[in-house]
Length: 118
Image 1 (cartoon, rainbow, N blue to C red):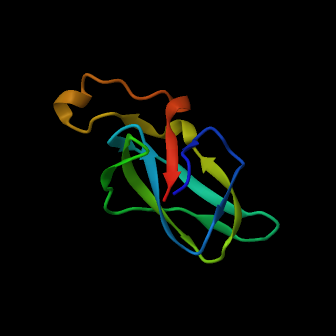
Image 2: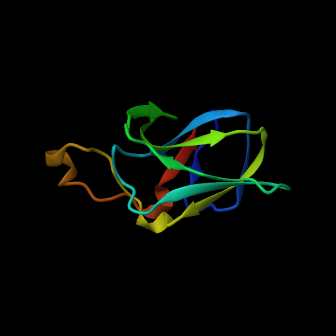
């Protein structure tokens, strides 16, 4: 399990072994992704991996926060990767996804939204 990464922190480096990983948004369960996506670029290599939107957006708790799976990433080779967030300012997150509660809540500020790769 990796530490959460702020979506405004582009070019952050992470080492991942081979596998399929879930990309989770932390902080709330009502997530509107719009055109948000993630690209991993192999450091010192040519490989570029794009996230794939998740059909089942599963809610859970991770790192003591509400989390929602929004995408998956398939890593074919163990390496160090650089993370790039595309359209980071377009993602919207509210704490609750219940219509009554979420209507009284504001969206989280973009600088507080974090992503976890598990």
